[in-house]
Length: 438
Image 1 (cartoon, one colour):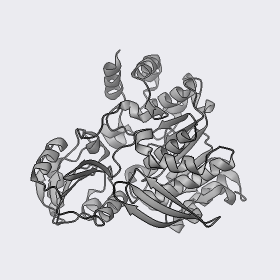
Image 2: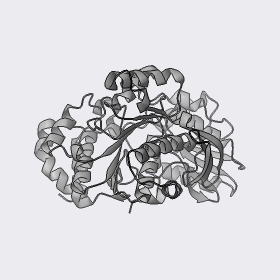
Image 3: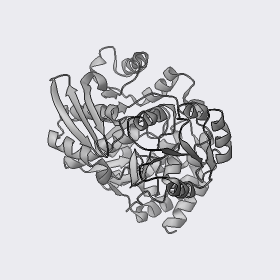
């Protein structure tokens, strides 16, 4: 098989969450364990950091990778989903795995694939572990796909577990209360492993504290690090970068950083990242303040992260963001309200299994809307999205292809207008303007 044939085999043969939703979710770790045993348990040969959370886990994973790379560590990075090319999921020092590796790995795994019948995500997790073990990395950042307790990545025993946020998403699989969702995310907590928690309600902290005690004993509170208790945000300023000043509460020292990720929601992600870096420094990792500053300044160019309040054009200003749930959209609207423009043109498409009504309720009625959809079976039909939006006084045009919608929006726009594309990772991934993977 060549690379194109290999991808067709993986996409067509294996249940894929982006296409099927919950039907592709395997609610146990058995398949992943079997796949990795076949490979000689490559995950046991690498040091890892495990990152989960409703929102922010992708940004945190990429920031950590950028800082570690800047510090000179050979750094693996496993994330999902990809935007343009499958190989974005598996990188070492920002460079995607080779097409040849994907082909060879898949051909080697065909007998066990046919026997085990894993999901698409399960096989990609095993692929990542194999790649990081066979091309030795000093450390690998591993992002969960969904949840934590039963996520395929949860066979690792990491140096640090990071949980960025808890919010309403994937309730059909993770539970109908925030406490239940937190319980699923808490499943990545391992015995004697430090845990970093992002900003969340106090009642949810107790869920993680209880899980930590159950795994590491009554005297394990020293392993729990609350990012917003370690770092206080003093100021933020966002334009094409995010300038942020934080106070480290242990020393009262102030630190100023410039991020090439300008979304104001990144302020909480940065606190998670800095807390994690402090733990790694305590473990003996040689990471300086210079490494931190330079790493945060070039996350996109170092790791290939895209779709986080990313400016694709300047006149009119076209911004793409992968926000797709209630919490993510709330931050997006907050940022829109803090910048100046003549008219807002919003291009939105969502998938069927999100709480679409809660997202629509947050959107400004004064904007001009284009309702569209990604080219996946899970996509909510644009016509249906437009009908739902009318209930919130959101009116606009249905254009089923996102690039056609963007073309129409640009023709409509003045040079001082803002065009925002959001609602689905898969929608953003289909944008022709988005830089293709090298």
